Image 1 (cartoon, helix red, strand yellow):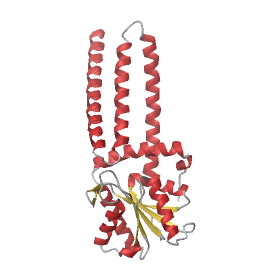
Image 2 (image 1 turned 45 degrees about the vertical axis):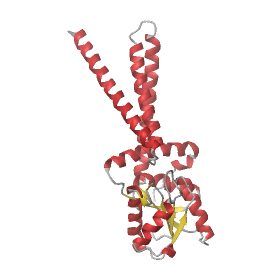
Image 3 (image 1 turned 90 degrees about the vertical axis):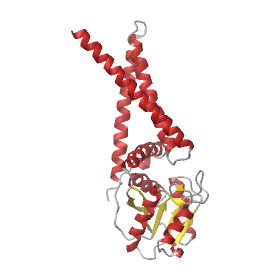
Length: 276
Protein backbone atom coordinates (compact mmCIF):
# COMPACT_ATOMS: atom_id res chain seq x y z
CA UNK A 1 0.00 0.00 0.00
CA UNK A 2 2.69 2.47 1.03
CA UNK A 3 4.76 1.50 -2.03
CA UNK A 4 1.82 2.22 -4.34
CA UNK A 5 1.24 5.61 -2.74
CA UNK A 6 4.94 6.45 -3.01
CA UNK A 7 4.98 5.39 -6.68
CA UNK A 8 1.88 7.47 -7.45
CA UNK A 9 3.36 10.47 -5.63
CA UNK A 10 6.62 10.09 -7.53
CA UNK A 11 4.82 9.81 -10.87
CA UNK A 12 2.66 12.84 -10.08
CA UNK A 13 5.71 14.86 -9.10
CA UNK A 14 7.45 13.93 -12.35
CA UNK A 15 4.42 15.00 -14.36
CA UNK A 16 4.23 18.35 -12.55
CA UNK A 17 7.96 18.92 -13.03
CA UNK A 18 7.69 18.08 -16.73
CA UNK A 19 4.75 20.47 -17.20
CA UNK A 20 6.64 23.26 -15.42
CA UNK A 21 9.73 22.59 -17.55
CA UNK A 22 7.66 22.69 -20.74
CA UNK A 23 5.96 25.95 -19.68
CA UNK A 24 9.32 27.54 -18.87
CA UNK A 25 10.72 26.40 -22.21
CA UNK A 26 7.75 27.96 -24.02
CA UNK A 27 8.09 31.23 -22.08
CA UNK A 28 11.84 31.28 -22.77
CA UNK A 29 11.15 30.91 -26.49
CA UNK A 30 8.60 33.75 -26.38
CA UNK A 31 11.10 35.97 -24.55
CA UNK A 32 13.77 35.09 -27.11
CA UNK A 33 11.48 36.15 -29.98
CA UNK A 34 10.50 39.37 -28.19
CA UNK A 35 14.16 40.13 -27.43
CA UNK A 36 15.02 39.87 -31.13
CA UNK A 37 12.12 42.18 -31.91
CA UNK A 38 13.89 44.79 -29.76
CA UNK A 39 11.31 44.89 -26.98
CA UNK A 40 12.85 46.92 -24.13
CA UNK A 41 14.08 44.92 -21.15
CA UNK A 42 13.45 41.51 -22.73
CA UNK A 43 17.13 40.53 -22.81
CA UNK A 44 17.23 40.33 -18.99
CA UNK A 45 13.90 38.46 -18.87
CA UNK A 46 15.15 35.99 -21.49
CA UNK A 47 18.29 35.16 -19.54
CA UNK A 48 16.27 34.82 -16.32
CA UNK A 49 13.85 32.38 -17.99
CA UNK A 50 16.79 30.51 -19.49
CA UNK A 51 18.30 30.17 -16.00
CA UNK A 52 14.99 28.96 -14.52
CA UNK A 53 14.66 26.38 -17.30
CA UNK A 54 18.23 25.18 -16.72
CA UNK A 55 17.52 24.74 -12.99
CA UNK A 56 14.41 22.65 -13.66
CA UNK A 57 16.29 20.46 -16.17
CA UNK A 58 19.12 20.05 -13.64
CA UNK A 59 16.69 19.00 -10.90
CA UNK A 60 15.03 16.48 -13.23
CA UNK A 61 18.42 15.07 -14.26
CA UNK A 62 19.62 14.77 -10.66
CA UNK A 63 16.36 13.10 -9.66
CA UNK A 64 16.94 10.51 -12.39
CA UNK A 65 20.56 9.98 -11.29
CA UNK A 66 19.45 9.35 -7.69
CA UNK A 67 17.72 6.20 -8.90
CA UNK A 68 21.03 4.72 -10.11
CA UNK A 69 23.21 2.96 -7.57
CA UNK A 70 26.47 4.31 -9.01
CA UNK A 71 25.61 8.05 -8.87
CA UNK A 72 23.04 8.10 -6.05
CA UNK A 73 25.24 9.76 -3.40
CA UNK A 74 26.72 12.30 -5.81
CA UNK A 75 23.27 13.20 -7.18
CA UNK A 76 21.90 13.63 -3.64
CA UNK A 77 24.74 15.99 -2.67
CA UNK A 78 24.42 18.01 -5.88
CA UNK A 79 20.64 18.20 -5.50
CA UNK A 80 21.00 19.50 -1.93
CA UNK A 81 23.53 22.12 -3.06
CA UNK A 82 21.22 23.24 -5.86
CA UNK A 83 18.22 23.51 -3.53
CA UNK A 84 20.25 25.57 -1.03
CA UNK A 85 21.38 27.86 -3.85
CA UNK A 86 17.77 28.26 -4.97
CA UNK A 87 16.68 29.12 -1.42
CA UNK A 88 19.39 31.78 -1.21
CA UNK A 89 18.25 33.12 -4.59
CA UNK A 90 14.66 33.41 -3.38
CA UNK A 91 15.80 35.31 -0.27
CA UNK A 92 17.91 37.70 -2.37
CA UNK A 93 15.05 38.23 -4.84
CA UNK A 94 12.62 38.96 -1.99
CA UNK A 95 15.05 41.48 -0.47
CA UNK A 96 15.44 43.22 -3.84
CA UNK A 97 11.68 43.43 -4.26
CA UNK A 98 11.47 44.98 -0.79
CA UNK A 99 13.92 47.69 -1.85
CA UNK A 100 11.97 48.31 -5.06
CA UNK A 101 8.71 48.67 -3.12
CA UNK A 102 10.34 51.11 -0.66
CA UNK A 103 11.01 53.55 -3.49
CA UNK A 104 7.72 53.10 -5.34
CA UNK A 105 6.07 56.34 -4.22
CA UNK A 106 5.80 59.98 -5.23
CA UNK A 107 7.42 62.53 -2.95
CA UNK A 108 6.10 66.06 -2.66
CA UNK A 109 8.65 68.89 -2.71
CA UNK A 110 9.45 72.10 -4.55
CA UNK A 111 12.08 71.21 -7.13
CA UNK A 112 14.55 73.06 -9.32
CA UNK A 113 14.38 70.68 -12.25
CA UNK A 114 12.64 67.57 -13.49
CA UNK A 115 14.09 64.60 -15.39
CA UNK A 116 11.81 62.26 -17.33
CA UNK A 117 13.59 58.97 -18.02
CA UNK A 118 13.11 57.52 -21.48
CA UNK A 119 11.58 54.19 -22.46
CA UNK A 120 10.70 52.53 -25.76
CA UNK A 121 8.76 54.05 -28.65
CA UNK A 122 6.07 52.73 -30.95
CA UNK A 123 7.23 54.23 -34.23
CA UNK A 124 7.62 57.90 -33.38
CA UNK A 125 5.18 57.84 -30.47
CA UNK A 126 5.73 57.02 -26.79
CA UNK A 127 5.03 53.46 -25.69
CA UNK A 128 2.45 52.86 -22.96
CA UNK A 129 5.24 52.79 -20.37
CA UNK A 130 6.72 56.07 -21.58
CA UNK A 131 3.29 57.70 -21.94
CA UNK A 132 2.53 56.91 -18.28
CA UNK A 133 5.73 58.76 -17.30
CA UNK A 134 4.89 61.76 -19.46
CA UNK A 135 1.32 61.99 -18.15
CA UNK A 136 2.59 61.82 -14.57
CA UNK A 137 5.15 64.54 -15.34
CA UNK A 138 2.42 66.79 -16.74
CA UNK A 139 0.39 66.29 -13.56
CA UNK A 140 3.37 66.91 -11.30
CA UNK A 141 4.39 70.05 -13.19
CA UNK A 142 1.09 71.80 -12.46
CA UNK A 143 2.57 72.95 -9.14
CA UNK A 144 6.09 73.51 -10.51
CA UNK A 145 5.80 76.54 -12.78
CA UNK A 146 8.73 77.43 -15.06
CA UNK A 147 10.85 74.57 -13.76
CA UNK A 148 13.07 73.18 -16.57
CA UNK A 149 12.16 69.72 -17.82
CA UNK A 150 14.87 67.37 -19.09
CA UNK A 151 13.60 64.65 -21.41
CA UNK A 152 16.29 61.97 -21.46
CA UNK A 153 16.63 59.15 -23.95
CA UNK A 154 18.67 58.36 -27.04
CA UNK A 155 17.95 56.37 -30.18
CA UNK A 156 16.89 52.84 -29.30
CA UNK A 157 16.99 49.73 -31.53
CA UNK A 158 14.58 50.10 -34.43
CA UNK A 159 13.67 53.69 -33.52
CA UNK A 160 13.69 56.46 -36.13
CA UNK A 161 13.76 59.39 -33.68
CA UNK A 162 15.25 59.69 -30.21
CA UNK A 163 13.10 59.03 -27.18
CA UNK A 164 13.87 62.59 -26.05
CA UNK A 165 12.46 63.97 -29.29
CA UNK A 166 9.28 61.88 -28.95
CA UNK A 167 8.86 63.11 -25.35
CA UNK A 168 9.47 66.70 -26.41
CA UNK A 169 6.73 66.47 -29.06
CA UNK A 170 4.29 64.85 -26.59
CA UNK A 171 4.80 67.51 -23.92
CA UNK A 172 4.55 70.30 -26.48
CA UNK A 173 1.26 68.86 -27.83
CA UNK A 174 -0.11 68.89 -24.28
CA UNK A 175 0.60 72.56 -23.74
CA UNK A 176 4.08 72.63 -22.22
CA UNK A 177 6.16 75.67 -23.16
CA UNK A 178 8.90 74.36 -25.44
CA UNK A 179 11.43 76.75 -23.87
CA UNK A 180 11.15 74.74 -20.63
CA UNK A 181 12.09 71.47 -22.31
CA UNK A 182 15.75 70.46 -22.58
CA UNK A 183 16.55 67.41 -24.69
CA UNK A 184 19.21 64.87 -23.72
CA UNK A 185 19.42 62.59 -26.76
CA UNK A 186 22.46 60.32 -26.36
CA UNK A 187 21.80 58.10 -23.33
CA UNK A 188 21.15 54.36 -23.61
CA UNK A 189 20.55 53.31 -19.98
CA UNK A 190 19.49 54.72 -16.62
CA UNK A 191 22.96 55.73 -15.45
CA UNK A 192 23.60 57.56 -18.72
CA UNK A 193 20.14 59.18 -18.49
CA UNK A 194 21.11 60.72 -15.18
CA UNK A 195 24.77 61.48 -15.88
CA UNK A 196 24.09 63.15 -19.24
CA UNK A 197 21.10 65.05 -17.82
CA UNK A 198 23.33 66.30 -15.00
CA UNK A 199 25.86 67.54 -17.56
CA UNK A 200 23.07 69.24 -19.54
CA UNK A 201 21.80 71.03 -16.43
CA UNK A 202 25.30 72.27 -15.63
CA UNK A 203 25.77 73.45 -19.22
CA UNK A 204 22.62 75.53 -18.82
CA UNK A 205 23.93 77.17 -15.65
CA UNK A 206 22.00 75.23 -13.02
CA UNK A 207 23.64 74.92 -9.59
CA UNK A 208 23.20 71.16 -9.38
CA UNK A 209 25.04 70.88 -6.06
CA UNK A 210 22.29 72.83 -4.32
CA UNK A 211 19.35 71.85 -6.52
CA UNK A 212 16.56 69.40 -5.81
CA UNK A 213 15.67 67.35 -8.87
CA UNK A 214 12.53 65.28 -9.45
CA UNK A 215 12.98 62.03 -11.37
CA UNK A 216 9.90 60.78 -13.20
CA UNK A 217 9.79 57.09 -14.01
CA UNK A 218 7.61 54.06 -13.31
CA UNK A 219 7.19 52.94 -9.73
CA UNK A 220 9.26 49.75 -10.17
CA UNK A 221 12.20 51.83 -11.45
CA UNK A 222 12.25 54.64 -8.87
CA UNK A 223 14.40 53.06 -6.15
CA UNK A 224 17.27 52.30 -8.51
CA UNK A 225 16.97 55.60 -10.38
CA UNK A 226 17.04 57.70 -7.19
CA UNK A 227 20.04 55.95 -5.75
CA UNK A 228 21.98 56.04 -9.00
CA UNK A 229 21.27 59.78 -8.96
CA UNK A 230 22.66 59.88 -5.43
CA UNK A 231 25.93 58.34 -6.61
CA UNK A 232 26.23 61.29 -9.02
CA UNK A 233 25.69 63.80 -6.22
CA UNK A 234 22.13 64.74 -7.16
CA UNK A 235 19.57 65.50 -4.46
CA UNK A 236 16.63 63.67 -6.04
CA UNK A 237 13.02 62.94 -5.20
CA UNK A 238 10.88 60.38 -6.97
CA UNK A 239 7.72 60.84 -9.00
CA UNK A 240 6.04 57.48 -9.57
CA UNK A 241 4.14 56.77 -12.79
CA UNK A 242 1.78 53.82 -12.64
CA UNK A 243 2.77 50.94 -14.91
CA UNK A 244 -0.07 49.98 -17.27
CA UNK A 245 -1.39 46.39 -17.08
CA UNK A 246 -0.67 44.07 -14.12
CA UNK A 247 1.19 41.67 -16.42
CA UNK A 248 3.63 44.40 -17.44
CA UNK A 249 4.10 45.38 -13.80
CA UNK A 250 5.04 41.82 -12.84
CA UNK A 251 7.34 41.47 -15.84
CA UNK A 252 9.19 44.70 -15.09
CA UNK A 253 9.49 43.89 -11.38
CA UNK A 254 11.42 40.76 -12.36
CA UNK A 255 13.53 42.75 -14.79
CA UNK A 256 14.22 45.48 -12.26
CA UNK A 257 15.33 42.98 -9.61
CA UNK A 258 17.96 41.66 -12.02
CA UNK A 259 19.08 45.18 -12.95
CA UNK A 260 19.23 46.22 -9.28
CA UNK A 261 21.33 43.17 -8.41
CA UNK A 262 23.76 44.08 -11.20
CA UNK A 263 24.03 47.65 -9.90
CA UNK A 264 24.55 46.43 -6.33
CA UNK A 265 27.39 44.21 -7.50
CA UNK A 266 28.96 47.17 -9.33
CA UNK A 267 28.20 49.84 -6.76
CA UNK A 268 27.42 48.94 -3.15
CA UNK A 269 26.10 52.44 -2.43
CA UNK A 270 22.87 51.52 -4.23
CA UNK A 271 22.00 49.56 -1.08
CA UNK A 272 21.78 52.70 1.06
CA UNK A 273 18.17 53.36 2.01
CA UNK A 274 16.84 56.89 2.44
CA UNK A 275 14.16 57.07 5.12
CA UNK A 276 13.26 60.73 4.53
